[in-house]
Image (tube, rainbow, N blue to C red; front, side):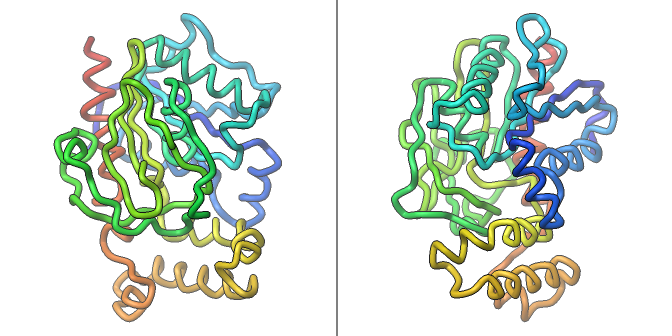
Length: 287
């Protein structure tokens, strides 16, 4: 199934260029490209633009220009949202403006933190440390089970993840939709002003190959933080993940890595993205 409607979507890449270069050197796609890949398949008639918002020479849409798009998507970022610097504050200001314009927003990782902070919530460093590769046993809250973001999604699932910070204060107008033992806020729905933002801490847009390459990009901090005794161990895990990506029927490797269809199959993994289009973006275009 695809959505044939003509729509315009702006995908906002939250990474500064130096870190985009790091990701490229690790052999992975840029953060926005994974969303673009999904949109090209599910919304083939959509016009999709990318905004490199962390580059200070990038001109940002404002005022009536915000109405040039039907919806906005936020990628992850290596920035820290509670740091008072222009690369961060301009992003928060833009998200607030999009809220005010009444345009739907979606985001993952940095996106859920943006959804909260732009609406008055708070983000801090997670005292439990980094959550990496796989967010295990994400479970829907009662509100999540009833929310259209999770229509057709299992009540419990795993997801791709890589983050150090967490939402510690849900803003007024925010609803907790999913949680797990490591990060209390795994997804939110936030209504602020005229706008609505659905967001996840985990990454529904990733696949196993791209997460494997992200491990390579982050192998130094993963080792320094004590998850591995040497960077070669990160490389070995990454290689196994790529092997499983290429051969998803390898049951022994699936068991070793503890990976199920919720990780391997885009039908489950991308459900939130389809639901955002179907139940938030399309209805908003009809208003």
